[in-house]
Length: 218
Image (cartoon, rainbow, N blue to C red; front, side, top):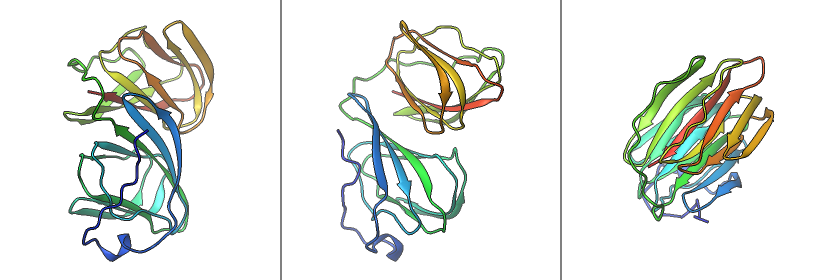
């Protein structure tokens, strides 16, 4: 497993140098490609400035009223709504602090530098009832927001990339991966790993639009 907190001695802003309670971390996926960790920031909790030797995707899972986020020389402080995505390149200083009065959660997707590289895979057109919006596309990852209207479904298909999906609102989905099929109501933050070149399909089975973030690892 890749450690997600490596302390770095730097001249940081005072807010990120203070001793404070660390966020609660729960590992939900750990394999040869990624480590996916759910982080819960209580009010006043946070990180000191640190870095990693791997790229990192930070997903705002639930909204925060005052999120203090620093990445390299860029710092943003204020409300942060669910679904916002931040990419942190390997070796880049960063930290998150909850400076507000309510807890929030984030998902961190650590992309392992020892992963097997994937073949190129251009974006594809979405089936009827499904909307895909690319949020980020770089040398390490492509992140797409996918919305499934009630009753919409994908045909079975494959990708040359390993895939991580993160459910952003609660609702019922059917997920088929190879011969396995599961059909249930899933909570916000449900994470599914889909190995490369394995046939899979997602279908909306409830009465509301379901939103996922699809993270394709390159």
